[in-house]
Length: 104
Image (cartoon, rainbow, N blue to C red; front, side, top):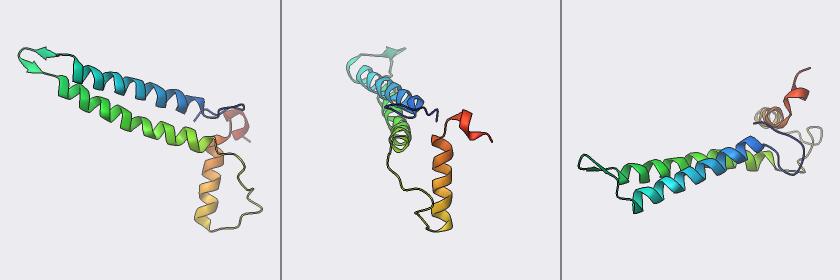
């Protein structure tokens, strides 16, 4: 996730999700409304199914973008939790931290 300061974090995930949604919807609409026959075989179903898969695949981008934009989380000092909780917080921080700050 390429994160940066500003209004939206993880801009790469946002662009990925929107692009996959657009490609998926266009593919589905072409499959439904365009008559796509090649050598007597109809390829409309293939476009509908592949478009649905692209839209489903974009959900990963939306989840990453949304989770990267969550603000106001409590610091580690205030949170105790289990070892799994600490591991999840550390992983989340590494994903959100810009690359220039991640190396010691």
